[in-house]
Length: 143
Image 1: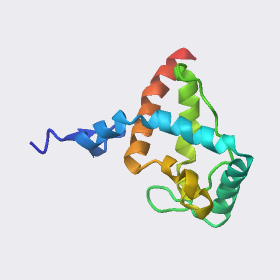
Image 2: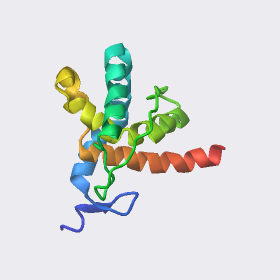
Image 3: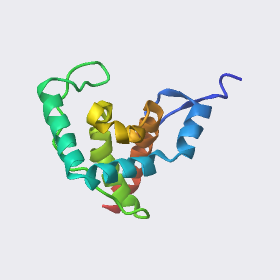
């Protein structure tokens, strides 16, 4: 029974099937789009996000899966069009996935507690990364 509750994600990692389905049901891609819109809606939020990336790079806040410090690129978070899959791909890659560490730090800041509900949990990020893999295949056939 435990085997039927486990799945393997796009990167070969074991995940809990029930929790993954629940994450899919609350649509993390739409949630990611909401994050981009919230940050773009306020010039102060937009500037603070940029400062989070800059300061995080200087202070080595961001790490890879092995705990080694990484430098995040200063990129502009891109909006997407709801029905255009290739634009969703470019919103996710490199924007959301690359900015995951910075977004997590950004939403932890006391100045952003009013929008902290937009912070994605680890399973939401997993779904977004899996969708990135799926959409990457589609994108490669279009070019």
